[in-house]
Amino acid sequence: MTGQTPLLNNRYQMIEPLGSGGMAQVFRARDLMLERFVAVKVLRPDYSADPDFQVRFRQEAKAAANLSHPNIVTVHDFGFDQGMLFIVMEHIPGTNLKTMVENLGKFNPEEALPLLVQACAGIGYAHRAGLVHCDVKPHNMLVTPDHRLKVTDFGIARAIASIHPDEQTDVIWGSPLYFSPEQAGGQAPSPASDVYSLGVVMYEMLTGRPPFVAKTAEKLAQLHREAQPEPPGKFNPAIGDALEQIILKVLSKEPAARYRTADQLGRVLMTFGNTRQNPAVALTPEPPPTDTEPTIAPQPTRRATSPTAARPVVPARPAVTRYTPPPRPETIEEEVIDIDWVAVALGLLAFVAVGGLIPFWMYIYYQFTAF
Image (cartoon, rainbow, N blue to C red; front, side, top):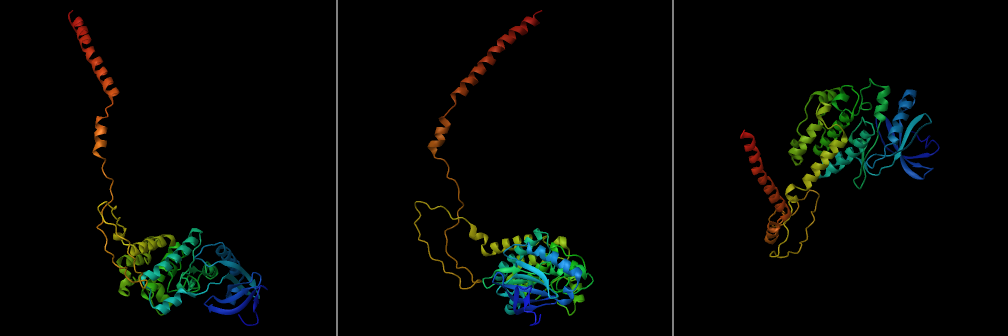
C-alpha cells in the first residue's frame, strides 16, 4: 500500500506497516468508528483482482470471523476497497513465535509447553468448528508480553489454494518448512495435517531448527514425504525420552498414526507438563498425625530463582498409606451377642413341624405295604 491510500473503506486509517509476506501486507491501523487500534491485512493485488478469489476469500473470512476463542486472533471485518481485499483483525501487541525462536535459539520444555498447549487449544477449537488452518507455522502465532499465544490467518491459504490448485508455493498449502506429507503431495489438508505442522513448530522451538532443511521447496516436499527426522533429543537433551516420543509420533508420515486433532495433542502435552512439574512421588499422601507425634511448624519454602531451577528437597515423614482403623473390641462383642431370637424360634418351629411328620408318613407306608 502506498501513502496515497491512507484510509480504507472510509473507516480504517493506516498508521504503519507491521510486516509482509508472500500473500499480504499487514498494517497497524486505527478504526475511526470504534476508536481502537486494529491490524489490517491487505492482500496482494493479483489476488484482490481475481473475482473467484474474492468470493472464496469472503467465505473463508466469514468462517474465521465466527471463531471466538482466547487463543485465536479475532476477525472484526473484511472488505474490498480501492482495488484491494483486506481483512481487519484485533491488534496483538508483542511478536510472533518465529522471531522468538530466532532470538532464543531454542526453548526449554518448561518454556515451550505452555505456548504449545495454547496453540493446540486455538487450532483445536477451529477443528471442532469444521475449519482446517492449512498454514500452521510460527509466523502465524502471535505472543503477547504476558505470554498469551494467539493463532492468526485461518482460511487464507485455503482460499488461495481453491483458485490456484497447481501453484506449489509457501502461499498455497502452507510454508514448505512446515507443511505435512499429504500437503507436500498436493492433497487437501485435514486436521491431522495441522497436527503435523504443530509438530514441526514444536520440533523447531525445542531444537532451534526445523526437522527438515533444503534449498528448494521440491526437495523439502520430498523430505516431508520420505525422510525421518533426527531425534530431537540429539539437539536438546532436556527434551527427554517421553517428550521425544510425542514429537516423533506427531511427525508420522501417515495421518492416522498422529493425533487426530489439535485438541488431542494439547491434552497429551498438558498431561505431560503436569507430570513433569509434579512427579508421582510428590503425590504420595502424608500419614495422619498421631497423639504421640510431635507437632512440627510448617517451614517456608524458598522460591526457585528461574523457571528451570530444581525445587528444594524438604525432609518429610515416611509415607504411610491412609487406612480406616478397625472397630473397637466392644463393638465386635456387641455384634456377636446381638442374636435374632425371632429367627431362631421360627427355625425351631420348622424343625419340629418337619420332624413330627416323619411318624405320620411311616404309619401310612406300613398301612399300604401290609396288604
